[in-house]
Each structure stands twice: as structure tokens, then as C-alpha cells.
Length: 161
Image (cartoon, rainbow, N blue to C red; front, side):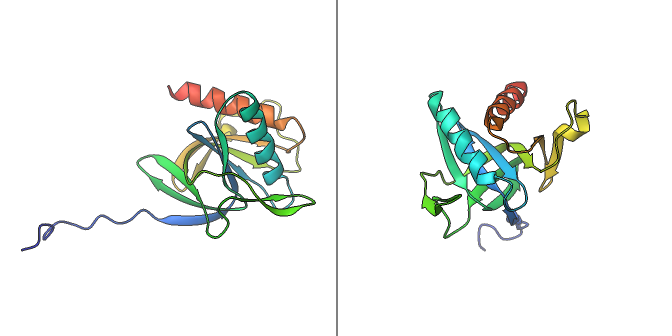
């Protein structure tokens, strides 16, 4: 009799593809959502530059199309083939960028043309993605917003410790 006979099969985690850009800062992922043209790639590259200038590890994970999988109360993001290591730079098109193959998402950033609330309600600072509750920050994607996003990541990940 095979060793696993009689054991219930464990279902494989469901993989989902979403329209988002993801970067890694240290071991923490920032997932950036927004409609086409809202500046997801621009914000991602600005975050990578800012974190790198501060001596932190920072890499692209996925641009525009991202695979996510939830498991063990964590959300893992990965690039979608054949777009690994490719980022859109406005005015240049698709260009190569150093990347890492996966990261645990610790912060969602939602980009919108609408100005975010100055003092958001607590429930607006959390969103559920693939059944995982994560801290969320809303912003317009203006120049300088990368500092706010990096500060939010540090604040939320410090709170987890």
C-alpha cells in the first residue's frame, strides 16, 4: 500500500493574477494597485531608489501583472512570465530592471486620482486580498509619495514585531 494511501489530499494554494506592481524592501513587499496610467511603475521605481539610497535592499518583484498566492496567513507575490525583470518606464517603454522572484506582501498602496482622506478611518487602513488582511495606504502617486509609502511600510511592519 502506498505511504499516502488513506490520507486526504491537501489542496494546492490558489494562484491568482492581478493588475498590480510589487517591490521588495528588505523582506517586506509593497503591492501597488491602480488603474492604467496612475503611476504604479513610477512609484515603484521611486521607492526602489529611495530605499537603495538609504542602504536598504530594494528590488522589483513584478510590474503590471502579478501572481499572488495566499497561505499560512501570508500573501506571496511573484512575477508573471515572461515579464520577470521588466518594468515600464514612461517614455522609454519596457526596460530591464533587477528583480527578485517572490516576496511576502506587507503593505498595499492604492493609487487614485482622488485625494485621500487626511485622517482616514481605521477600517480604511486595512484591505483584504485573497483572504489576507493587510495594511493599506491610499495616495495619488505624486512626486514625494514614495517617502510616505516607505514610512508607512516601516510603521506597519514595526507594529507586527
